[in-house]
Each structure stands twice: as structure tokens, then as C-alpha cells.
Length: 314
Image (cartoon, rainbow, N blue to C red):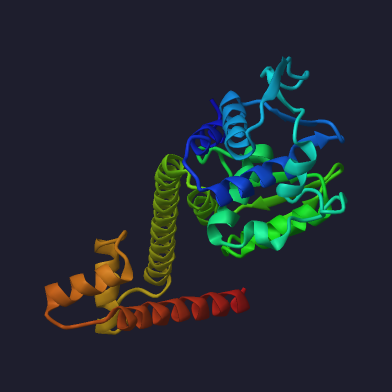
């Protein structure tokens, strides 16, 4: 069972008020129905969603629906469930803000239908049941989408989602429009909004695990990069020391430089901070990382100067 199916089955079982149920039905029918003067046809792949929509229609309008099961298309092995409404068609379409009182199609639901936060929640739940999907958080990317036929409805949904600070966007497709959210935290907020409590727990557990794993990987990468940098720095310092010893000898160097050389050769893998602590502890003479770096820079400058002079002589 897909994560989307799990969500739809969970929210199909929640209890809702009359106004919230009307908003939910409106969101579903406005985005998943074909109608004439005499009938309204609804279709879904999910039997639990089918029962949900039928119950809402029965409770709100006291109508009896007909059902039909069809085989899915070539891209889907699931059955398709068709709900046919053959009574009170005009009343249902007007009451759900699909048609105006004059019988004209409304490009977006009237304001009274989603007057409260509860009703907005219901409308979004209905749209998700009709046209929504969310990637399982175990996959490589976070993604929520609502596939919408009409541009005005897509923009309306984007604005409605963004009233809850979900940062949704609209993308035109070859057929219709996609309203989508890609931020993991915002998708979790959407699940809370439509009251998919169990899905929220699952989603957040996986998201937190992935975030922790990514953070651990980043820290490990940073640590490895630091180790590589320490080794690279120490290697260059030892190379400079060897060059000095071969071409100048130790006799002409001052005591502080000799001391640094001695400790670097003794502790070739130590960082500057570690080496400064070792020297301070063993000699009893405090030296900071910055002071130690200054001495190594002096060795480097001396080495570079000697190399230039030897190149000139050649």
C-alpha cells in the first residue's frame, strides 16, 4: 500500500461537522466529477474513499447513489469505483458551490463555503482525496502535489494553502496544473492540517531520522576534511624541515625554530593546536596555536627564499 493510499484511508475515517463535510464534498466534487442536468459521476481508485463520499452524500442530502466497478487503465492495476448521483443533482451542485444560483459554473467556491479554518481544512481534505499524492518520506525527495484541471482552481488552492504558510507553488503541465509543496516541514504541516495524525507521526519519524543521518554524514565529511587538512599541513611542514636540514643544517637556526622542528618530527600527525598543547606541557613554556603557526611560517619563508636563491645560482 502506498503512503498516499494510507493517508487517504486514514482521513476517510475521521468525524467532521456539517459545514466541514460540505466543504470537503465541494473540494472533492469540484476536482473529480462529471455532471449533466440529470447525473453526477464521481470516480476513485480507493474503496475507503468511495465509502467516505457516499456516507457524506447520504448524511447531507439523503440521496441514494449507484455504484459501478471498472477495470483500471493500462497504467494502473487497481479497480476504478464509479459513484453515480441521479437525484437532487441541481441542488447538490448549487449547495456545494459548483454552480451558481443561475446555473453557471463557478471558477472558485463562494466565500461562505470556506468561511472558517475548519471549513478550509475540510475543503483541502476533499481536494486531496480527489487529486492529491505525497511521496513516501523514505524516498529520496519530499513532494506533495494536487493535480488540478482548471487554472483558477489551482490558483485558488495555492492561495488557500498559503494562508497556512505552506509555501505552495503552481506549475502548468501539458494537461492541467500541479499545485505542489517540496519542503519537508511544510508537508508535515499539511498532514496536520487535514488531520492525518498517524501519517504525521510516520512522516516526522522518517524525516527526523533522515535529517539526523544527513547531519551525521555532514559532520563526518567535515571531520574527514579537517583531518585531511591537518595531514596536508603537517606534510608540507615536514618537507620544509627536511629541505632546511639538507641544505642549511640545524646549526644556523635559532633555538625556538629548532624546538618547533624537533616537536614536529616527533609528532608528525598532530594538529597545530595539539602540538602547541604538547610543547606547552612538556617544556613548561606556553605557546599558542597562533604562535606556533608563526614559527612554521618563518620556516616556510626561509625555505622558499633558499629555493629561489639556488634557482638563481643555477
